[in-house]
Length: 100
Image (cartoon, rainbow, N blue to C red):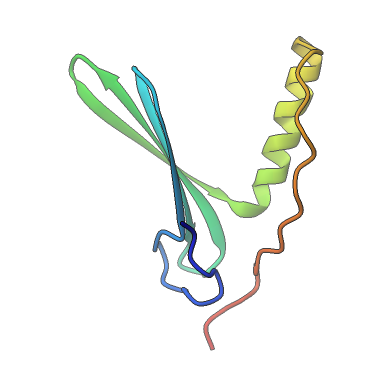
């Protein structure tokens, strides 16, 4: 469940969470704020091996998400041409909302 984004300005606090579980990898997506209170997606890839589980964290600025989606759609068109992504919804994120 997502929290109200305007009420929680603690950096690195999880605002929303989703997880994808597979046999070899787990991928966790967190919606968080960075130290400057900008929204980011924290992606943690957990690789499961016989030597243990290895975590690979990535921080993605929220304003990069449309570019990532556009790039994925272009790759799918170039290499498959049968895959189509539905239109991306418009979401009003409070990018410039900061603590007073």
